[in-house]
Image: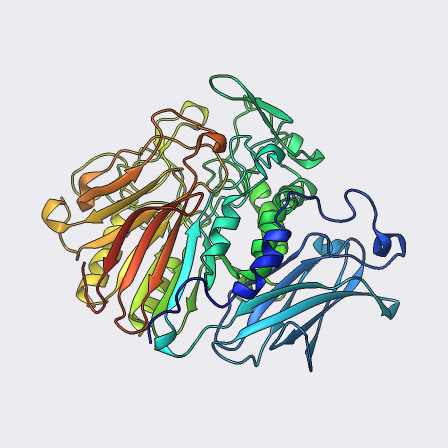
Length: 528
């Protein structure tokens, strides 16, 4: 039995999903409903789930006041014979957000859940429950796996536009019934204020929902928190979050464009009164950990890091990278030795160990930046580079040295079924890397697929660097820079692994869900 056909297991929920997709603000931000007037805690920002396993998962919520988080789970929407989970006390210390870990769940099953918020002084007083659903990871190969990925949300001043119905791309993604969504970074644009209006090329006006925290670049913890709350004003996103678990990583715009550890903002950038990027990054990281359900960043978690591996049954392992926290400074990137690179030595060794341990048919490397696409860093006029490639098609230099080490390791350890997924560059493309075309040849062929943005400016295709022999097999990108979402060029990708054959199919899709490009890869190979 191969992967379930579309529509799938959540078809019974489609009506409620469509009904909730109208653009509305969370309750409590507009007219106060009965529960708010009565003083009961409310969860107007919706619910999220994340990092599911075969028997566990995380549930997130935000309250409008101090509250005790309670989660109930059941096999059906009727919530007959529910299990109850007592979560944390939500307070100002976490901006009234909290995450509850569920455990002992059945493998490969659809779980219905609801979150209740109780008055800390009177547990009998609870707010209106907020419901959702998720599926635990299946241990059965025959069930297959389907997931989506993309990134880049509310960038370049293009925010929630009520005239367009908000972030409509989330409706298209929900219709595909994915097991989970991989958000590949730039989950917010903390450095990108959202104005009330923006002029559209050729005439017309783009309107934005606005908030006080989005009126300037984020510097304080409150402003970073407000950036994460901004996206949750969109009903499409809240409905998607309630029904599709997320796997989230970060990149630069969670803090500031093109940031790196130790950076000091130039005095000429008068938008920032705080000039230490390390200070800004610490505040952003705290807000990031509060607004997404990440097991490695939960309060008290031993790891305290973004990078991690998610075992998704016998068919798939997802290796979530952090190409931001441990990198060296952006530079011309032409040094002949570079032990730190873009991953840092500890993360690189972790990735090599985990890849070697993996017994999954497919190993997806979730990178928040591309490998062979040249991404310059023009911040404050510096002729530096932001990602891995620097445009020199010769032998590896700079950060390429670390990627070459990893690719060599994959080849010599004969690790099969690797492919790279990323976002960041605001267009969609498929690159095939081949030693016969490359200056560095000690690796096996592999694919890199790029998607995004979700709702941000679209940009022309990035040039390729020939060091690892990439060939661009497909690309869709605008000719002009910063094309608004009203002009199209908003993208997401789909990965569908067949339970019978083990074949993995990648589809690059537009914002309405239509397929632009498709490629099927065969299992059990070191290179494709």
